[in-house]
Image (cartoon, rainbow, N blue to C red; front, side, top):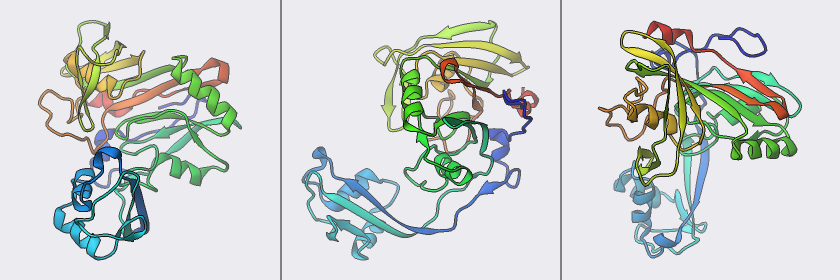
Length: 312
């Protein structure tokens, strides 16, 4: 691939990231960390154990009970019991003496850097900021190790999506750039490797989008307004490379619109017609490829991954 600055770079495709040993990965040593979270009004009167199971269903009742007995779960910094009744605003803390984070691709790169901002390439899967199981294997943490000074998150990119991220380096620029994203003044473009071959060179989708369950969304007449422009870049025998321009910015918009039109991203296990996963844990063939804000001198783009052409 090439950046707007003319620098030639080669990036692993999402499919490559699934092959053991195919690309370097970032692994952090286990570390101690205390998670904290507040009890919300609807959870008032709920026993502590029921609260933990509701918030974090991936861990069993026995596992949470052991953690409570070991003193690793506290309520307002005091010992608690499984049947302790909670109140709105209670501070629950969970101490983990040896957090083991999932590994992430070790291929973050800064493509453009000024005193106001930097444009970075985010591989997938990798979250932008801390949350859930990730505290250190995040884009913002890794960039903090690569450059000096404060960093400000301006926009989001799904963990499973790779590509360009604009990061502010001072409050004034970050405010202007955030406003540009909010007002739709940013030229954004994505590439997707999709199942199926469109007949049309250009087409659009305006299906509304709403949350279906948890992290999963769906196209629906009663959903929030969404609009995407598409252009077929290259056709193969069974797949195609499609350029995607999101006019609105709904969660999972490109994934949903492509699937609804009959051209799902080929490795998206959540939104393929036969998909059954509630959460995608591996990178998918969707890349943020262009970011332009002329009035702020932001202008960066990268090419379609060369590996995609081999999978058509």
